[in-house]
Each structure stands twice: as structure tokens, then as C-alpha cells.
Amino acid sequence: MSRLAPAVLVVGFILLASCVARVPEPARLDLSPRGFADLQGWGDDAHDEALAALRRSCVVFEALADEEPVGPGALAGTAADWRAPCAAAAGAEGKEAARVFFERWFTPYLASDRGDPEGLFTGYYEPLLSGARTRGGRYVAPIHGAPASLVGVDLGLFDPELRGRRLFGRVEDGELRRLPSRAEIDSGALGDEAPVLAWVDDAVEAFFLHVQGSGRIGFEDGAILRVGYAASNGHAYVSIGRALVERGALAADAVSLQSIRAWLAAHPKETASVLALNPSYVFFRVLEGDGPVGAQEVALTPGRSLAVDLRFLPLGVPMWLDITVPSVNSGAPDRALRRLVVAQDTGGAIRGPVRGDLFWGFGADAESIAGRMKHTGRYYLLLPRGVVERRVAAAGG
Image (tube, rainbow, N blue to C red):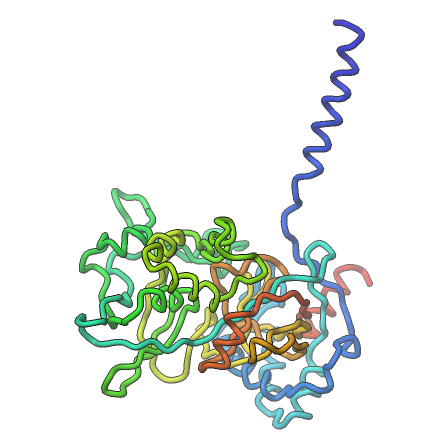
């Protein structure tokens, strides 16, 4: 071996080490205890609105066995830890009483991804589509219910770390396989297997209904059909907004529901191929009563229900938002939003320890804000005090 060889090896190891160092570390939720005085704007919120949303989650907690963990790794304790707070929630009436309730029963924790508390926050809403019960005329875009062959698997039954996540597919030759992609389904791959709940007059609006996960379909006779997420085809969600940016069709800072819709309207010959870039396809169910319904199977509360990544966060937990959001008027500056919400939903595009999707409700204002929301901010988890005390004891402090 020449005298140069060891030097070459050293350089090689240095280069290898630098490459390894550049590999991003996996996301991780870190929690840092805070006081309510640290939550800017805490005293100004309408806490009773958030409490009303929490009461809906309490119905779910009350149906669980005491030992049932709440969240991945029992992050928010067990169902038993929620018995007393939920019982107290029933008797807290009014804005001031609601604030005192949260301060009495919970401790806030700043959430971060390996120490970085800033994350992405988007919004969603409940759209209104124009439809018909039968196909004909301009009503040619189907809103499908789940196909008979679809199988849903609760991955939490096989791995506690996957609690809250589901996998969809169908069994073929003894194996669970994905259903056809969006493009294949639009081309008739499912045949008559997936029932049609309604026919709508705009394929683009049907696509956005898939993205939002729920909506209303208005018929010419004035009747309204409310539909919500039932299942998916098992394919990963792909953002067509990001794809249009990569093509140079849209600027990254200009991507919104509104800009994507406008681009598709201006390029009708490319619409089908662009929509097909997202292979994920959503199947719907008819909703009765209050709605829409989130992943926790409770009705969502406009402005108070948040979709989160269930790999890191539990459903049903109160969270303090400290973010910026668009104004209703697209020409007005962004505004600060500091309020208490409850984690009650999830979504395929919601990925990360500090990542939220705020439900804005129904109507033009909700669409205006949600469609343009792509802002940074932070949130704090409110965990039951019993959970906090046990963690302190376990840490020896």
C-alpha cells in the first residue's frame, strides 16, 4: 500500500461522514412545559367555544376502557385520566368558567420538532357542489361511495405505534392490495362496484371535495346531501399544487386553492392529466345530523377543530394555536390567530409533529380563508394534570 492510500482513506471517511451528517433526522415530537401566562392572548379567547368542541371528544373518551391509551405512547395518558376533566367540563358554563376549567385541569406544553416549534398550518372547509341524483346533462362527475371489495385495516391492532392509522385496499389471491389509482377509477376501473351517491357538474370541484374530505351537494329541487370521508383507495396523497410549481406553472408563494382552480380553468385540456397526478381517491358516505365528521367520529366545530398527524399527536386533546392566517379579503394583510382548538381530525397531507389543518366551516368566507392558508406558527398541547404529575414522578422530580 502506498503512503498516499491512508490519506485517501481518511479523506474518504471525512466525505462519508459529511454525507451521513447531511441526512435529516426523523421528525420527533418534543414537549416543553409552560404556564398559561406564556400563552399570548390566552385571556382574550372565547374558551367556551373550545369547551363545546371538547365535550364532543369527551363522549368518545367516556366510551373507552380506563386503560385505553390516548395518543401514541399514551402521550395524553389513558382514558381514565380524562374521566375527571370530562365530568368537570359538563358543568363549566360561560366564557369565564370555561377558562378557569382549562387552567384547573390542564398544563400547557409547547410542541416542537426536535426543538423547532415552528410548523406549517393550512385550512380546510366544507364546500357546496351542484349535483343531481342521476347522471345526465352537465351532471357527469360521480361522487362514489366505498366499493364492496374495500377492506380497511386498523394498523394499531398490529403495532401500538401505528394507533390511529388505517390502511385501505382489497384482497386479491389472499393478499391485501391497493385499489386502482385516481386515473384508473376515473377511466372506469371499478365498474359498478362503487355506488354513486350523486353526480356533480364539475370534475375539478369533485377533486377539491376529495381534498377537503367532506361537503354538501345541492340538488335542483333544493334538497341538500351531506357527504363525508368513508375511505380511500390506499394510494399516497400527492399535491397537484406542488406539481404545478415544479412545472413552473405556478409560483411557490402563489399556490392556493383559488390559484390552482384558476389555472385549471385556463388550461381545460390539461385538467384531467393534472388531477391524475394525485393517485389518491376518496370514497364518501352520507352524513346524517351534525357534520362534517372528523377522524374522531365527532362533528367538527368551525374554527375550533384541528386536523393533526396521528403518528405524533392524540385526538381529543385541546391545543393552543399561535399562528397567522389570511384575512377574508384577499387584498388585506394576514392577521394573528391565537385561540384554543381541539385535535379532532387528520388527513393524508398532514405530516409532522408541528403541523395543523384548521377547519373553517361552511360558506364563502370559510373557503376564502382555508383556500389561501399556508402559514407558519406554533401550538401548545394541553395535557391533563394527572398525566403531568406521573411524568414528573417517573423522572424522579
